[in-house]
Image (cartoon, rainbow, N blue to C red; front, side, top):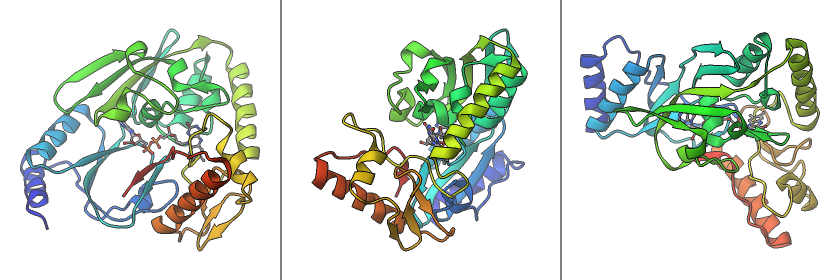
Length: 302
Ligand SMILES: Cc1cc2nc3c(=O)[nH]c(=O)nc-3n(C[C@H](O)[C@H](O)[C@H](O)COP(=O)(O)OP(=O)(O)OC[C@H]3O[C@@H](n4cnc5c(N)ncnc54)[C@H](O)[C@@H]3O)c2cc1C
């Protein structure tokens, strides 16, 4: 074992003996596409104070850390990842007038149900996105014409030493991008500004959104959502379909028949390289046919 990790484990044991540092976790277990190799150290974060101490131990021992939400936008390679993966499970949630204040680890499903119960509208578009609030803010997740930026009021985050707060105007939100795309800060808590409505109305809208999603996306399969960002010329799935790539397979990976922007791990046995091979094929074919270079939306961890 590398000396830096040896020292990291030693320091964790001495300073945070009650924190469970898992040594045999894999990205396959932690991502929705169910692909990815072993992780040197995995820690589930339930308290901010412990998170700050863990980051400080990482920095002191010069080991890299990676912040994980629900792994629904990630494609990780099958090699061993020499990182400390910090899964953000900060799950407090409360409503105050028309605001929802929630931990970054709250998943979008729970958030939507909380909003329905409290008669707060504005989040319905996100119903069915299988990520966390933190992942959603970083990616500026969006669908059906709305995005996180439309409802975020404030974000609390940390660099591992101090806790900061930024309001929506200084978060540099753009298409699938935010202030957090350019740094390694950890989002801790998000304040969302919503509008009052009846739980029935909100519930109905969520159901409509979900059935739209269900009918247009390969729901229930192993995937990481839309692989490509929308280029300005046209929708990526339209371009991919026009190239005749719909349903194409490479071993255990497949370009979805239902939505060409999704790549599916068909039997749970697809590898990183198989998915990457399809991604490269799509990019090459679309570029040769239309002169458009598709950009990946999913995060690829080599
Ligand atoms: C079936 C399916 C449908 C989807 N539909 C949509 C859709 O309609 N619209 C859409 O935008 N996306 C969609 N996605 C993609 C994905 O769900 C979103 O991007 C989601 O917001 C990612 O959240 P996550 O918690 O899973 O993030 P992860 O995949 O865990 O991480 C994504 C990025 O966010 C970072 N991150 C996560 N949590 C934090 C935190 N607390 N602080 C700092 N950084 C953090 C990670 O380091 C990583 O860089 C879909 C995915 C699937 C599988």
